[in-house]
Amino acid sequence: MIDALGLAEDLEQAGFPRDQAHGLARALRDRSAQDLAAKSDLRELELRLEARLSQIEQKIADAQTAMIKWFAGVMIAQAAAIVALIKLLPGAAS
Image (cartoon, rainbow, N blue to C red; front, top):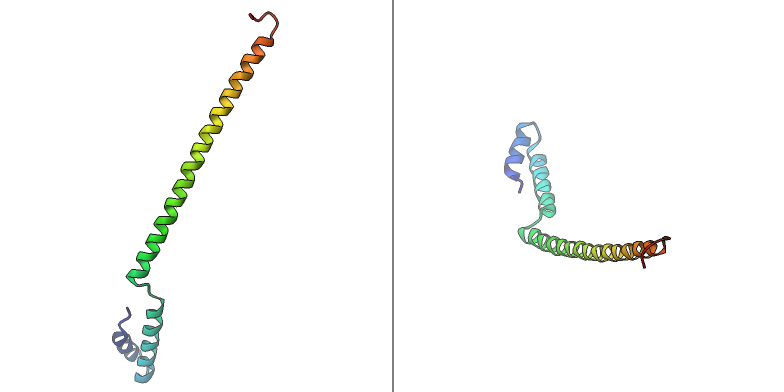
């Protein structure tokens, strides 16, 4: 929060007319109060971010599971292809 009185006094000492210094200080105080977040605003944002982070973590876990399943399938297919190729080689034991 802006110390409007202190700001007005600083402006007066810098050479601003009293009315102008106080008017500017009030305008800055009022404008800054509109732009500041309250604790409840920050808590709400924190909760939304935590929920979104949980969703992202779940998507990563799902992707890891899918990738492991895909990799296992490829390994099995590769092993089967190798066994089939070995059986096709001339002189391979049947």
